[in-house]
Length: 357
Figure 1 (cartoon, helix red, strand yellow):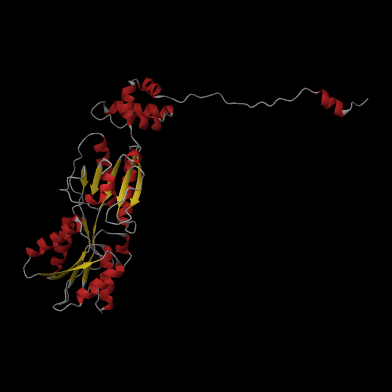
Figure 2: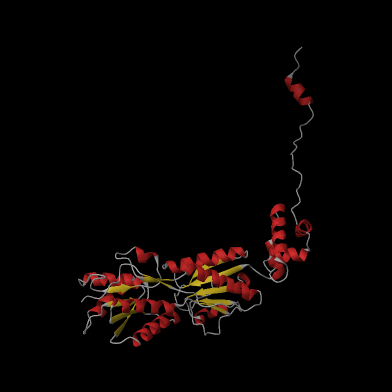
């Protein structure tokens, strides 16, 4: 007799659903790391917080890091930040993102920040070099500090008013508003450019000066003037120019066609201005460098994209960002950053040659 499947199904006990669970694996703690390394928890905290120098030996620090790696230990950053009152976030303020110099500054700052478990928020000021607004409801609650590149400290009142540590890059080193300054030796860079042109035989110069009132451009102008003042039989004409290839072309055209002897060398405050000067020269029927030598400054990607490639000054932008982040973490640790201006380097390419005979 074949049983009725409906009655059989009805008489079965109800099914129960079970879920297999893996046994809980306890996350390693700082106490586990201390035990594995044979040190105290305080030593673990110092090493993993990157505050061990001068407090524990390098050998001990290596042992702690190795134990942490072996155990797969990761510090609870949220709890640590809450305990310390830190956000582990820095704000990098730049005048614009159209210049790859600032992109390289950010790359260096972010790389160094990662070594300290910091994040970097990039903020292009809506007003360019003008007053920078606070992009947060409360900068103090959102940030640990501010790094600003190529701006005046007075333009950061809204941010610095939150009583945040401030590090200025490529700015007036005598300004007491900032907690630290990281500068490039822009004056030496401009001296190198001017001496290079003098050595080629040039005596009549045009300086296309960026039409921006800032420390870095004032320092460049003084360096040109001082270098030429010491050289015999030289002339210098100065004309303002926007940091734009299109508008600097117009400024260069006007300066090169002004009454008087035409300069044989044009010193530009930036590569974008130099590109505009090269365009102006071509439209005036002048060859670069046979009739007119042109130099830039910054060594942007643009410097090798134009023809002829620009003689310019290389600025170690990524190192500027790294040094800026190092200075900020030093301030946050309660110390005063120290350091000298970063060196600049003349890069000679095809846009300079001896003056026409």
